[in-house]
Structures are given as C-alpha cells and as structure tokens.
Length: 129
Ligand code: SF4
Ligand code: SF4
Image (cartoon, rainbow, N blue to C red; front, top):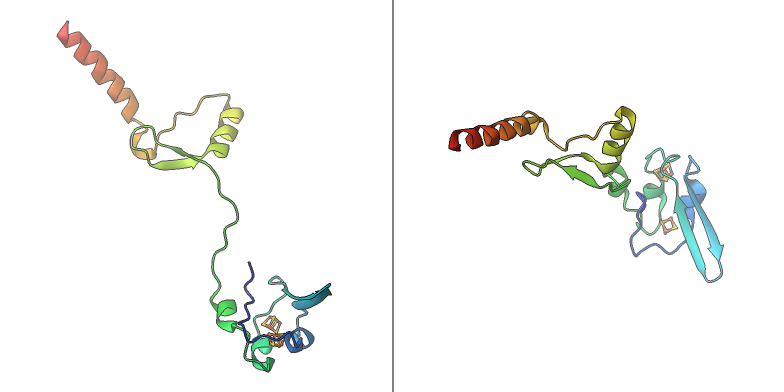
C-alpha cells in the first residue's frame, strides 16, 4: 500500500524521484523491472512531484486526502448478554493475568444484569416450592 499513486501514464522517467526536495522518492532497477519507491515519513506533501511530472501521472489527490490503513486485526470478546463487542481477547487475557481473576465478559449496560438474573431465578424457584 502506498499513498503515492501514479496512473498508467507513468513511463518511469524518474523526474519525480530526481526532483523530490525531501528525498521521499527513490527507485531501483532490478532485472527487467524499474521500481519507484515512496517513503511517507519523509514526504512533505509539497506537490512538486505532481507539478514536475511530464506525463501528468502523479495522483496527488491521493497523497492529500490520506486515509486510514489497517494496522492489525484482533479477536474480540462479546458481551455474553447482548453480544456487543466489548474488548479484545488479548486485553482480557492481560487483565486476567494481572488481576488473577476470570473477567466476566459483560458490557457496561449488563455489568449488573447477571446477578439480577441469578437472583430472579432463585426467587422464582422459591415461590414455586
Ligand atoms: S515523473 Fe511522472 S512519469 Fe516520470 S517516473 Fe515520476 S510519475 Fe512516472
Ligand atoms: S509531495 Fe513533495 S515530498 Fe512528497 S514525494 Fe512529492 S515531491 Fe517528494
């Protein structure tokens, strides 16, 4: 995934690489292929690459718009009453290990709900006797 996108007009002339003031563009030629590389942490989003490209190939809007990239996907624990996702499995394990307690998977809305359910069950048993 790259924030620096070029369209099909790019012919690999390297004008963008050679004129990037931040050194954010690079390239390497390997066997039959020329690879153009971009480093977002160096890029100043100055737009010089877009202005200088003789092929009108740099999709600079992509660089300006930006977007969220997926960093990691983690498993979720769901509330055992309503099924709402509440925290990640990893976080639950960390807290359990730290507190030496089994953590009940309950969302904030149902934290007090379980004891009430148990109490109601016991109460209904008592009245039916
Ligand atoms: S200046 Fe334009 S055509 Fe040349 S390598 Fe860069 S994007 Fe491709
Ligand atoms: S926007 Fe500026 S800093 Fe970023 S790659 Fe293009 S020329 Fe380099």
